[in-house]
Amino acid sequence: MPRTAVLRICNGGFEGMSYELSADETIIGRNPTTDITLLDEGISREHALILYDEDADTYSIEDLQSTNGTKVNGKRVRSAELSDGDELQIGQTRFDFSLGG
Picture 1 (cartoon, rainbow, N blue to C red):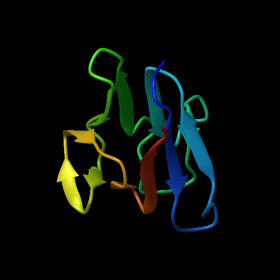
Picture 2 (picture 1 turned 90 degrees about the vertical axis):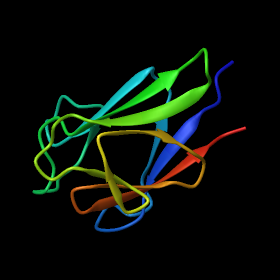
Picture 3 (picture 1 turned 135 degrees about the vertical axis):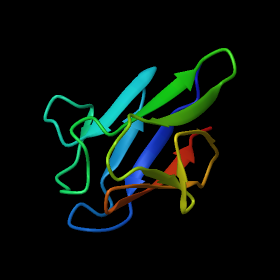
Picture 4 (picture 1 turned 30 degrees about the horizontal axis):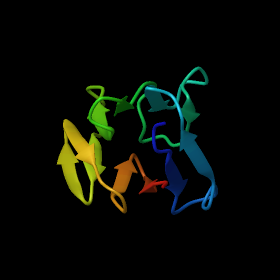
C-alpha cells in the first residue's frame, strides 16, 4: 500500500488548501484540465509533474520546461526527489510537501 503524500498551499488566497497525491502522476498548472489548477500568472499552463515511483516508494517533481521554473527548498530544479517537509515553489505559490504514514 503506497504512502499518501499531501501538498498544502502555504501562501496567498488559497493558503491552507491541501491536495492528496493519490495518482502516479499529478500535473500542476494554470490549465483547468490539470490535476492541481492554480490561478497564478507566474505559472505555465502545464508547469510541473509530480511522479510516484511505486517500486522505490518515492515521489519526485519534474519541471515541464516552464517559463518561471520550479523550486524545491528555494533551489531551482529540473527534477528532484521529494522528501517529507520539502517546500515547493511554483510561480508565486508555495507548498509544503508531506508524506503520510
